[in-house]
Length: 232
Image (tube, rainbow, N blue to C red; front, side, top):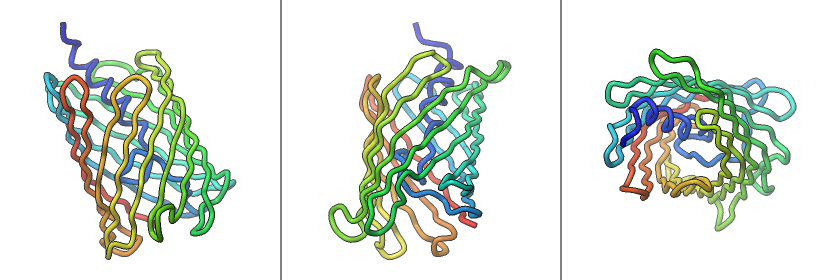
């Protein structure tokens, strides 16, 4: 028996809204927004998997640097799957434990609380996540960065806990472009593989990104996303 569409929508929402990394990565980096600065990140995604309706989602996240080497933010989103509509709300944050520089490995703690609400229902019990983050600058050569995450997530919708992980690489200074690639997942399912490009459309003020991801489990699932970041 197939699950109701609203359950599918909630499951997808909980697996996607926990993402709070720099677009288009899911894996977090150890950099923190400077105090008094902010970043606005709208994005759109389309996901297709076998025997399930196409999922289309849009979200916007605003995060700002605060005291104590910490950035805090909020994210709102909406997902459509067949005739179902799911709203999502997230609170996200990240705190530096060791500042990332060109010559120093960065260490941070990232955390989030998020919840989803299908049409005609109340918001579900919030999900919670926390991750340790390490970024290694110039790990292969100049302009290459390595990001490693390990953490824990409690899914409030199905009342289960998971161990989460992510590994990503970035190659900067390819003209106005940056290339990213990663694999991420948890101990309950197959990993995702994602690759994408950022384009510095207006220096470091406006960046446009595009990404493609796949997960091979019970039939291939594919995601395509586009978005941008406005730093101010």
